[in-house]
Image (tube, rainbow over all chains, first blue to last red; front, side):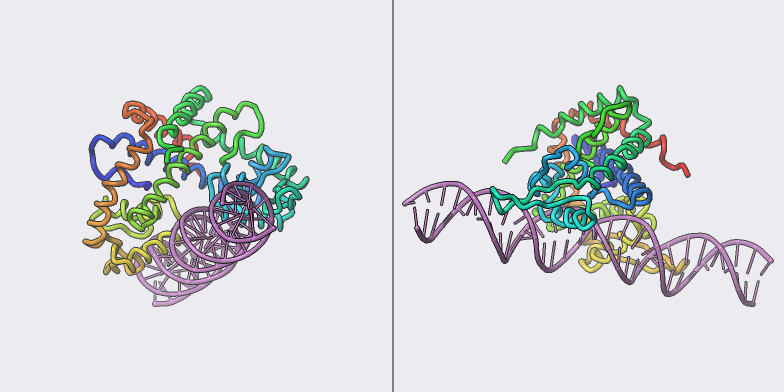
Length: 154
Length: 154
DNA sequence: GGAAATTATTTCAAGCTTAAAGTTTTATAA
DNA sequence: TTATAAAACTTTAAGCTTGAAATAATTTCC
């Protein structure tokens, strides 16, 4: 998936784009993962879950998290389990629907995330330093559009 | 890593770009992974390794593979182990340097990959259909540049 | 009301992934 | 030489990831 096109033809430019896209995101992701580990002894998936919860102080259901983060249900279960055992997150059973539980950041989790997020934003700024803010806005716009074609069919 | 910015400020546009980039590649990657599983009973990492080997009929060392695919050494060991056990790849010890072994596609592996790659290219064309070929070339160019800033330091 | 379907979540097995530690082989250099 | 370092690779432990199966609670509808 990270290799170059194996043939030439009509789809060639889109294939090249996809390979670039994947290499770029993997490279940046690897660097961020390494720094999160070294500087804060945490992981990207934990960071992702905490980021989602930080935006929803009222809490999120497990299924909200999995939908929002584009990962499977079972995956979220494990990550939340670990965050709970580290005291960064709570799972509160609900009276209304006893199948579900509300996941929230603890006070410690909130403080911890705020610290990490500030540094993280700086890292991203650094790693994407080759793109001007203006160019970043244009690229963002392009990326916004290109999913709509096929997503949400079936 | 997939959530939106948690603050506003100077790095905001780059952070937005990074989040878009990651969401886009994760969405496409997930779709491709699912199709590879359903249609060919294989996985993305296996496909990646085979794609790399397909470009190098003379073979690749394990370390070549790991460098090219941007993954760790130990990771490649496991994937190649499975490909070998499936008869798609061979590991040939070398006379010159007995620490290393040359990894090559078998005849079956070559045929299998060619089939899958053709279909795969079509999928990418479909999934990136919202981007014109012209636009794809421009985006590719932009992505090409934006790593050079920080990569290869230290 | 009660069977049947749906929804929310967890569990499980298999595989992917990394960093770190271990093994074997080759290169360096005193 | 022959110790020491370096290189190539594998192994290991821990965690991430998925899809499928299992569990439990709620809703639907006869």
